[in-house]
Image 1: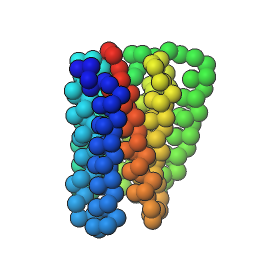
Image 2: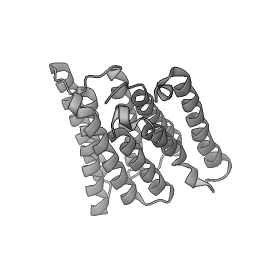
Image 3: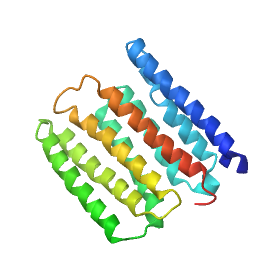
Image 4: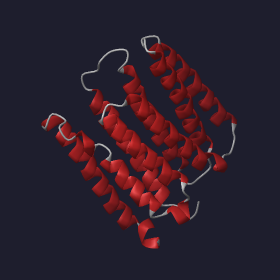
Length: 214
């Protein structure tokens, strides 16, 4: 399995990942989204790569990416509640991977509290514009789970721990833009949501593939 951890293999894998992401953007902007099903392909590819390394890196990240793929599919077919549910499960698996390697510090705890306050204010702002109770509840629960994912990413003590934090924040930004869609329609929302989302998953995938053990 060492070849799957080599710099050359990871580079080629990320080139392939970027091509799959580019295919999604081309079809979205040039073909009027008639092939929306290609949205899950980059994450499915990333999940497959990580499953190949599961004996060395553990099962949590591959399963997180697998449920993210299901969330992408639900988003492609406009099933919002299923999309939120699948990503909530994905973040729980991210938490299961990050939290066992935790190390507390005052700065980390301060950052976690700051994100919690900002997320709480933002969720209150967004849900004030949502009439459907089921959607409001789903967004609040999801917001708490993704905050826990970010908190566990901040707390973990691993090599390149800063990149885990960057990926978690990119994920939060992407989902935050999606949530803002309940407030008002953003004309270029996809251009904000998908690049940051794909980048977050790519970072998690590369970091996972570089591991020597879980």
